[in-house]
Length: 136
Image 1 (cartoon, helix red, strand yellow):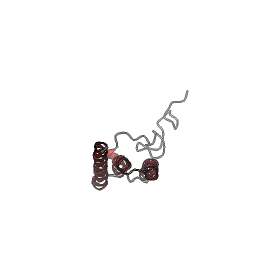
Image 2: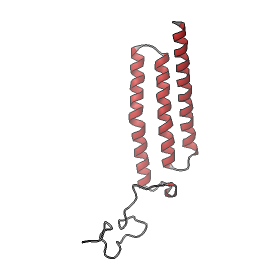
Image 3: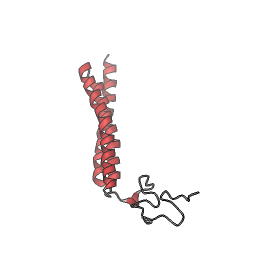
Image 4: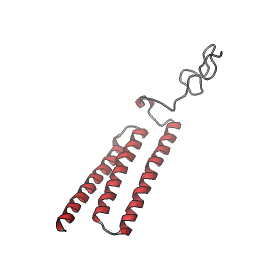
């Protein structure tokens, strides 16, 4: 029985250390990345994985159904709230133009040609309607 406990302790320790390292890298990413979208990515991806690994390590090390259920609820709450809140903050930052658009590879939320806010102008080309298509 002692060998099983020592293996479980080693697995729990590895989960706790890797989770703590991921949370540390998430914090460093928040400080070092240049724009809001990169910071939101750094703040959610490794941080969520880090917290989940810490919860797994805690569940392995701590025994008891009440502790395990509490850790499971914390993990579920983390999975539900962190990505959604980061998405909302990123969307608000994009709409208020706090995003460095030169760093975007694809701007899926950008304006269509001829729409208000289009950098090529607000008026459609000759013979085109507002959607950029030619009637007919």
